[in-house]
Image (tube, rainbow, N blue to C red):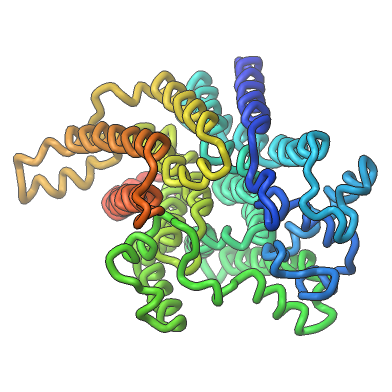
Length: 507
């Protein structure tokens, strides 16, 4: 690719923004006894380094699961162990059993921030650059602009470098998986996605599109010939990947069951904190958690999730293409976020990743969604003292997208990917030509509402009788946005027949 120096500048800009945000506060800073996610990640280093594998997920005298017990898959534990070995070389006090709880210092903060930075630099950022360089029918300047906007997405930066997590690892592996299966490196793509699932179980949000896309490829090749061979290879790759990741836990059946219980904590209920999904929003009007038994809540959430993602998955299976795959990733991840059981506010990042992948195809809607996704996490970000970084990064991202894609200029049905749908509607309603204008007006109204709610939240105190009023409003408004986006992307998937007819056939 030409102008590599510009891509280097883009990476440096992304890294600079990340490190600048990392200078701010983090989750649970100076807030005993539980502190926050920062302490959780440090504590996992303590546990994995000092205890045998057989005790990592069990409640013992040395591992109180009520105090940030491990609740992610084995690959996260291995990553924590790797970080712990480095921490041991620098300062053993950081991971000393029991006595290191709540450890806070500027040096330790620098170390922890660096671990996120290095993981991002090694896994996520190279995947973003390669993805943008592989974009077809896109100019060199367009690829550079696309990389800049993806790397400046504020939601991921604020959560990983502000709040403190390692989402860039699982999302990076998932992106490598997307690259693999989209360019017919199906085994490498399957391996990368297995690593993503084994790092964070929430990557199951993306699992059905991967399954349907790969199965559709096998159907295209013929299940009595090359397709069957490909299917066997993929199955073997997936099984081998999981066996390698879970090998230390195969000694006893109870080991595996305990890890699974930690990964899928049904006892926590339908939802916990304020999250911008259907169940939390609907709970404002009807207390579902109190009315329905736990098992009914599980069945209900499963049915709604399954039914909402089924049409897109069926179409992808019978009309597989890289474009349809990316849009189905968006639809399925959004369905999981809106309807599934025990969703966290940070899980919106799993929807944001595939949205970033279609940023160059539908820049207006994608930019809108990515801004709303960051806004939906505002209560969490304010709790962590990240108001200023949130405002600055959102403004920087908006300016980058507006400059790169001219999103505020007049948009058309083609640019919104709604040409096929609009043509179908005009067969019955010939005068319906104002859809782009409606969407533009909705966007302007949305921005005004988000700005006003932000100002109200940071300047006014909520009523004493309704202490969570502003947080609930933010979640409810964001949920309405996400429902709109779910309908919008499913319309594109079901009406954009070019996905099935004009894409190059899979050999």
